Length: 129
Image (cartoon, rainbow, N blue to C red; front, side, top):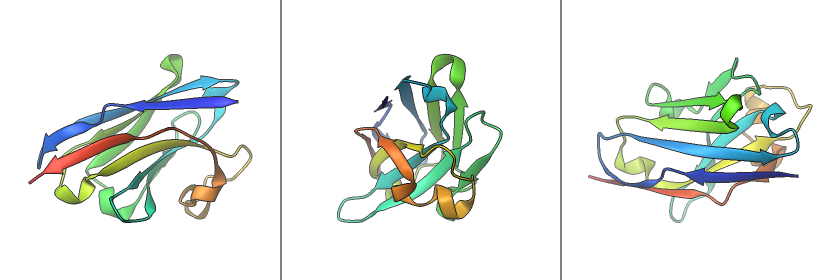
């Protein structure tokens, strides 16, 4: 079993920055590829970014490329999402998730919610314009 706990959300002005953290605990937690998703009010949950277990591969949704960056520090059992130049449309609940082991790290795999086996409770980000 793996537990995920997000933190770092809050209220920020447009153009500002936030760094979200996701602490991974439990059996072999650092061996999972990880992803971030977000869900805006009244909308479906969308893929944001993903990272391989060792941080060597990353993948981003087109909407966030160049502004958001995913990273991880396995020594600290933590995955990060650095968010810069935030926009009002970035307002959402942000969730980290662990990709099912054994799946290939392809866009088709990483962008699908049903490929993730563990989820955190989410952290809220509100961007004021």
